[in-house]
Length: 507
Image 1 (spheres, rainbow, N blue to C red):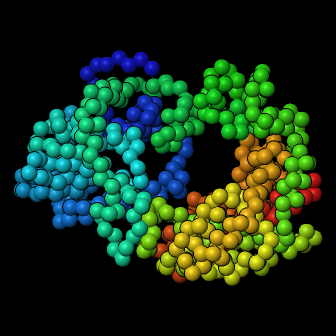
Image 2 (cartoon, rainbow, N blue to C red):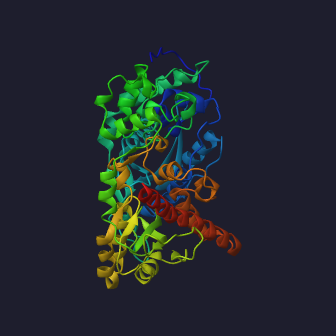
Image 3 (cartoon, helix red, strand yellow):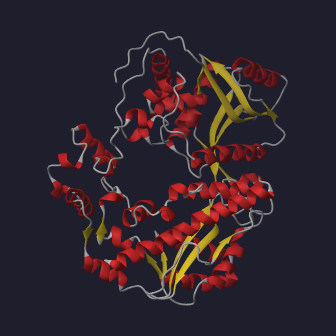
């Protein structure tokens, strides 16, 4: 897109967050600036990240305790700037959320601390490593404060979480955080930042949204809330080029830009992977592609009793329990359906081992002891994407040395139910290019209301995680309801595996 520069009058103050949005996509920036309603609302995981950012920000203040905070006053940018200037004038040496305006750009600095050489500024992030857009976050602040010339600037830092840190009785901020100077990076980006500001000011005055082609920027670093406004209406159709299994996005876009948006437009099928060719064939023939030898090979590895098993986990940016690391996967729930023999028929509502930890206590010892008690001493443990479950068991073994050997022995018995699908033993067009259990189950067991995830209040792992963490602030009645919904979700995950494996056996 060619940009023509001219003197611009901003409709709205250009904030740091809007600058970062404009870095990602000019069209999304314009739509957001003009209050266009999103077509794709943020999911639970995105909302959880925002909450985590607030929690981490509060802990970060303890790096320089006793500072003065500038309150957030919605729409009152000048008043927040005035409060900041007064704090500096009155001799404050540490300021939280210091607010500044320069050239119609508004920024809030997470932390400012005065040294003998000048002021250091800190951009705090709830991730465990520095990302490119974090550098732009800090660079626009550096640009504004440099040009504002209110005081002497010393250095700019990005503060991230130390993923090696294990919480002690209390969080020790200087161990919990990693603090990295990026002054050189901010100085290098100064011209780029200035040019981008000029470009965004220009775009802000467009009468209509700019034209921007779809691409990887639509999903990175953040998934766009206007995705459906730009992407093709048929992108989720069963024969959409965007549904080709594990085809890199760049190749999908290359196909799409050449007018190849459906399977039928693909000329050279031989260039596709084996799984993609199976996907193509299943769509053409309107019947599953089955390799019975591969199915037999998988079935031959199964030993009864089969324990269909699934974990649910949560993560905390700010660790709650001792020896918990930032963003560590913490198992809090499991379900297991146990099939003693090939002829045994299971029912979704049969009594079966299941567990949810007390949300006010560290779940690891509780859940580990329950696992050892309830797992059969022999037979196959069947999971879907077993690496996740096995990783959780390794985490529990490390935390529970008294149960370490028994827990790690479980990992020798796992068999991954995704193998027949990923390995080419079975492909159904209704998988829509995905081997997730939520695509495989309805394809193999259609029109069964008992197996419908959409009927559940909690229908995916992200919702399960956030729902469990919300228990910490709920009433007894709310807790009982949430726990029941969590049980329903995890129960369906393990029963779904039984249904899928039973279907494979019938072939």
